[in-house]
Image 1 (cartoon, rainbow, N blue to C red):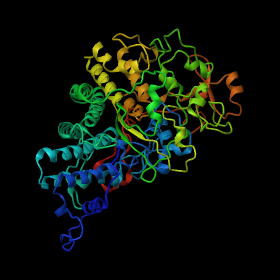
Image 2: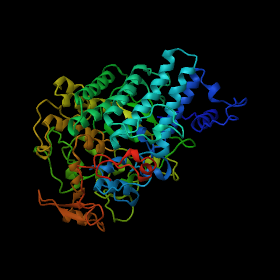
Image 3: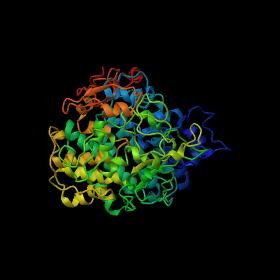
Image 4: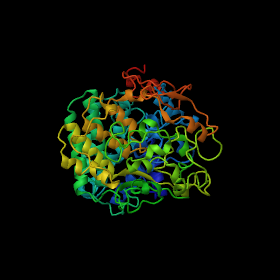
Length: 596
């Protein structure tokens, strides 16, 4: 979701404000260009300035709060398609995805500088984003407009600031809260980090202001447009759910307040917002249909999205799609059978002796997420090359997978065929209504207040779209999750979140906030490797291991590599390390525990 009309005068203004100098000569008011002293007058001035935030947040590497698909070579990393590589949904083994492999294996090292998707302390670009917001907040009062009009843009700026600080806190814990413009001699540059709970109190104030003052509709038709109040409510529900569950499972004050804020924000959006799930009554295609088109204008589920257009902003994400390796066996096995039971309990489960068996009698979302061999022609996979899929790494020609489970949810051959490097236009869906349903159900369940009516207005709407049985209040416990220390109902709500939001950037954060990092110690496996597979996937180059639970052999993606035997250190790996250069510049920041 971007406003691409960043005019030349805005660029001049940004340079002027972000690089201001106190030299007496430069303080003279320019006669032929915009200046800080003459700019802040009208509503249009505030709107134009706030466009800066949308422009800056296109930098998905350094400011990934509205993570889409960064352009060019960064499309290989900075895309919400790939972030599941930090967790147990994907098994990337391409060298260009080394940052994901390091974190996934528990072999992340303390970085020297703030750069790259796996560092994210953001360096000067991220903190300049905060500075730009604070400059606006200090200057908005100068405009000769009503408070009601002014506060729309104050709310917009505070939404961006709260969203950014939430991301800093979820990755690093304590953070240096700044709410004014800083200069080279500002004391805050050498201040200690503020405790996370105090930072998050400030974040909640920002989000509450935003959800109160941003308009329901900016009159832009969402094609794409500005962040409206409904988007702010979804962001608030996401932030509050993270913070509430973090405090519940990691320790912290008043998690119930945060969970209630999450539930209330989601509920207001669900009850009063103009959005709904996309459905045409086709359960075999509706789930992934709108994830595979170039224009989602008018889609009732898509709340915020970023348009890519040749000559303005493009990406290369479809061609880099295979760098994510393949979906894991662990993920694929989480799909329920069509009777609503997990594979551990359902008599309908056909096993995994062949990949076709895996799809039999399963939630229709599985076949809309992972490529079934019979669907290659339908999806024109890979660029309608006519080969048999899946193809395993080592096989010649076509697109190969590290696991045998090719992701199809976001695949769009039409955005690759005949297109040169970095000319693709695959859109990025930043916020969609389905998340609100998931946030609401989880928050209510964590509070111990969920009812069947709550399930019917949330989880069961998602299941209705794909003609799956409803979730009731007393599902059986899946033996695979019996030791997680949560109720069977919460198991199923978490499962629904994993399935629905696959490759949308949530899984790693979810495992961390639930304090389930130990799940990342389970090796990433692929399809079963038996005599049939060996003959079918001739010349595949793989490693295999035997599953001690069933005695069958599976692709073991990282066996005999640097990423084998993953570890998760509970004492340090829930937070990331601060780069050494930042600590050298300000020792008062102090390193996170375990990373010293």
